[in-house]
Length: 207
Image (cartoon, rainbow, N blue to C red):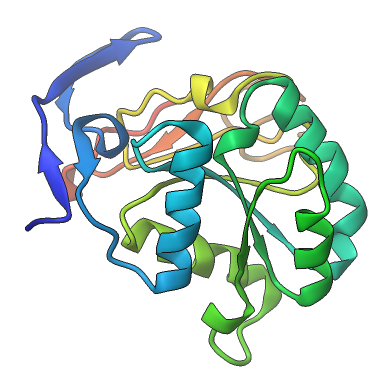
């Protein structure tokens, strides 16, 4: 049985862009089975049960022992905006795992250390874990542990591209990407940057 069952393709548009036929993974495909390691599949199943949503979408947080003090504020804001049930904390060590499991409301915790290749640099671990979740059939929204949510982040996604990312709200006036280069105001909030490429069948890039 294929890992996903196709639904009817949708046409997405908005924010001044024309409608483009797309088949967003999180909307038009139902996970039929988990294709990842048992620990990953168990974590995804726990998120689906907690959120009562079976679209495979998770809010990924990757934390190590020195992130412990940031976990509680993040979970508090996630709970306040209704995103806590989708939260999956990938703990890089035993201290982070214990800290995450002690939180209230308790998020789903994935003990990620056994999944990581030996010698993998810490900045690369979050992307390795995100890739593992994607390979297992999930749709992943990654957040840094120092983020504080003021609204449900899933509501900011268009679901019409393979990769969506927000600009840095702390961008300075000299920012090459989100300040000066594209003519954005310093510290502008609320716009989503979408990457794409026609040769790969993606939507074009916009802001």
